[in-house]
Figure 1 (cartoon, rainbow, N blue to C red):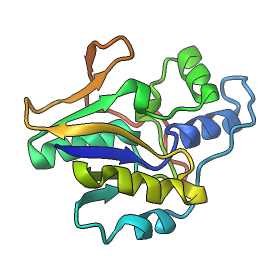
Figure 2: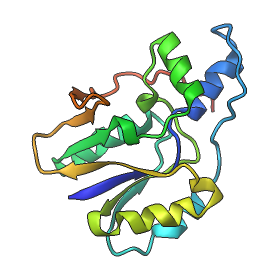
Figure 3: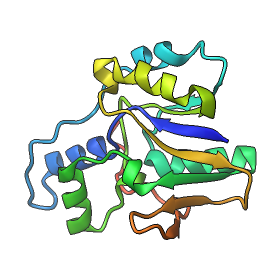
Figure 4: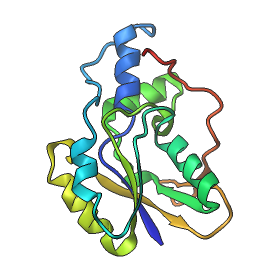
Length: 171
């Protein structure tokens, strides 16, 4: 079973853009996570157990999981309690009805790594300023082709495929 890693908190960029646009009359001091992903990719690119790396810019972590599911035919299982999300992002998402798993992430990397090397990849990322909030967030399993979120209560929620980007492109 391969493990899924993310290099830092998800949803920062999407919420930062929403707050900057002031369409919702809210303010906050959350900065976009825009940054180069080069140091993160360089840190683990030569690991023999590295299976996949991609940035979750458009459509966030959930969309990357759907892309992987379609290509591999395997199930992607995310652990809600393991996915790093800042409190401000959670608050904005709760108020506006968004899901941080679908929001744009700039300067982040999602990787799939063999189980036996996942901790090594995590340590490599956490040693970098860009990977301070890195976490192992789930696993790839041979099961029914779905993207599943194991909730904090231990239940399972199917993460549907994103039909439209919740945050229109600005570039």
